[in-house]
Length: 441
Image 1 (tube, rainbow, N blue to C red):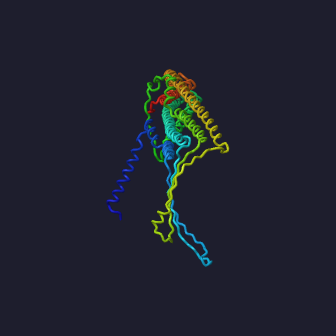
Image 2 (cartoon, helix red, strand yellow):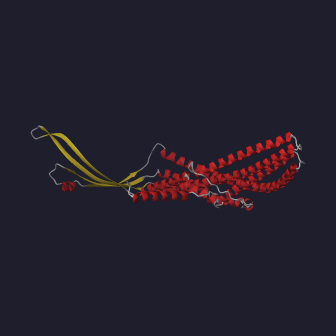
Image 3 (tube, rainbow, N blue to C red):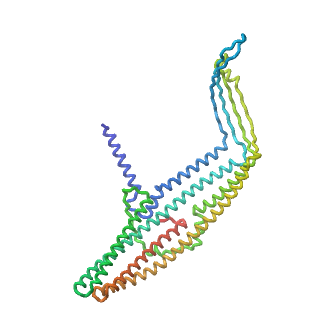
């Protein structure tokens, strides 16, 4: 049996582990907690950070090329041969010999390729860091869109439930009018059909909400059995109609801060360094090498230390390697590096244009959504009044079913238009702010 202290320690450890796991996930998920959790736990982000560490290893390797190499070798060799003696007869001659050496080499100059490679690998580290930032931005944007889709779907479900409740009340009243002989069976059937249609729409809205929650849960990479308790904040008019900065100002801010733009600039520098390295291959390489070694023979009459001393040999040399002809490899490398620079410049220009397109589109979506939101609010107000009056008149038998359903559909359509404009404006406002380095929350 385990000692009591060991069992108690295991239970405490499990309890602490469970508590830590619980602390990592919020009890209720709002937009900020979703983004914070994803930035800490998303697999793609973690892989991008590993890429940064990998690039730093390459940088250390490039710097190490400035240092001399050092190798040591030890060998033991057994030889056996037949040799002729003084009498002319042959006999076996065996010996065991040892060789011990240390050698070193170092590149003194190679046209600046080592220094250019160090500089290039340093830029690669920065590129990986920018790539990691881009991944974080992409995840943040995706989480924001998914979270607001959940809020939108939830509001649509609320409207659907209100519509069903209203249709149920109208069907009940239509039944009373039918029993009283104040309405025809055809009118009653229309109200009943409308209720069925509203229930179907509510089911579709609920399915859309469930799918939106699932999408958000998958982006957060939660386990299959984990529940997602979403916080549903009340979005005020001030959030929907907040002023928008000038799009030129937004673009200029984004140009100086977005990682994809910085990456484009840095890729041009990397390509230029590749060209410099390719041109450096035309220059000679000067290297220094040296070695020291000794040896011994085990069946010799001399002492071991004496043999090592007598066999000691040193060498020191400078080698100059001059490229003369290498089947056009250097020339081709230079030409390809020049093309790479042009491609990097085009990629940078394309990134700028893509950013401008995204900002202009998002900006226009904000302006359009805000204007539609204002108009939709007026439409909801007027259609609600109209629907309420017609509903009261229907209850009194003064309006027929067609007029009631038309007013109801107009009101419901206005509600959905308001809802769409509201969340479109909120989403695009958050994206515009994000382009300006304002955190999404």
